[in-house]
Image 1 (cartoon, helix red, strand yellow):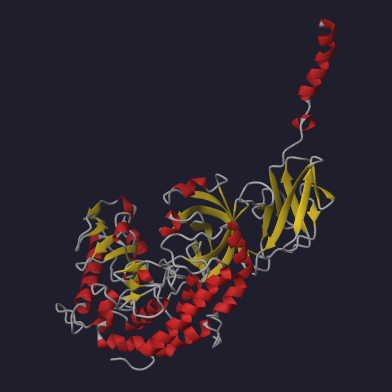
Image 2: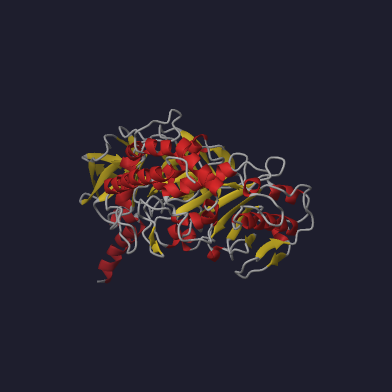
Length: 563
């Protein structure tokens, strides 16, 4: 026995020194494809197979800008794999990955799986990575962020930008708490003009997960551009991959912020920073943190720039968001205004802002439309053109939040304008009949009936429309601009400048990508949601029907002069 063990010992040692693959078949742990110029499996543009079950059959979601006649295949585990009968090493080139084709992959002599190839439509692509290599950290809370890398690829395969990210985090409210397909905000290390939208560092990726047509935000933002609403948000459909994983069809948007390429008003925050020694956020936080009329928050900043009349960018929003906003004001009518810029208001700036808001409200609630303290009329306090245009946009879209949330306003410095302006337009995934909840028996999903001028007598929109001159301005906006926008959406007219397209044109633009998105994020009807349809085409039909019926009803209201 001892002699036998002495003879076997060298053989045992030899086996222990052999690579693991010589003792057991290597498990395939990753299978990716990339364009030919990718140098390794770690290239951001390497796309990983996906399966909802984690096993065969798998899907490869291929970006629309790729030439699928020749792609590189990357994998980890075995030394070679056989794809449709051809033996390949990791990094080898394979052809024939056309849309709809199924690949049969074999490795270790017996293990097999299938991969179906789906190719996106003519959308651009955003590839992201995080420092941790996953989304787990930023998905836990919106307060978490990570650094990372980004590659933005145009629809023709050319690179728009490739650089570091100083931040990526989740954003949104309902889209964060109610959905697995999150929305994101990312910040570039260096300013870039993505798809001609103007140079900026901060960008937003909207998931549109609550909108199964994927079009509601896009058509509304483009309609705002068509209508000439100043600083309207530009956007671009993109397919998004994070750490190699396909995350779906998104809308890449400009962030609503003070910037020469965004809301181009005086940057009061930068001006305030320039005359103070410490960071503005380091000064004492003052004001009331209670939710009551007349309450507000600001910072005890010692020095102000010479001109504090602008610019201000702020929004009307829900009271639940008051606590998390550094600078804010609750009007005496109970409206919550959250200040985006300056993020850290001084006491003097706070006083200027609340005085302006209170003056507007006194005029709104006056039968004559005049502020009883200053004698100024509404048309002296607000920019009628932007307010009337925004009003029609919100009413046409029948946006539930139009009276409550995501309603932006801006005030330039007095040398530019002494008036408060409405806009930019933002957040419409629940508009156009997409939000089901009824409020006080007034249905927001019906294509008929006023929404902004309804039973909410305490809303700004109700008070605006109660003034005859504003009603006339609204009707004029409809007649001159929005009835044509409706006709364009319905394919009855064409925008010669291409700012707005028909719903059918938008649909065909994103169809292939939307079908990929539906596979990646299967339709799920939640109790209380509007029954917009279970398929992409059903949702498009629902949306077009709503727009058509809504147009016809509003034409009856505003097609001629109103009193």
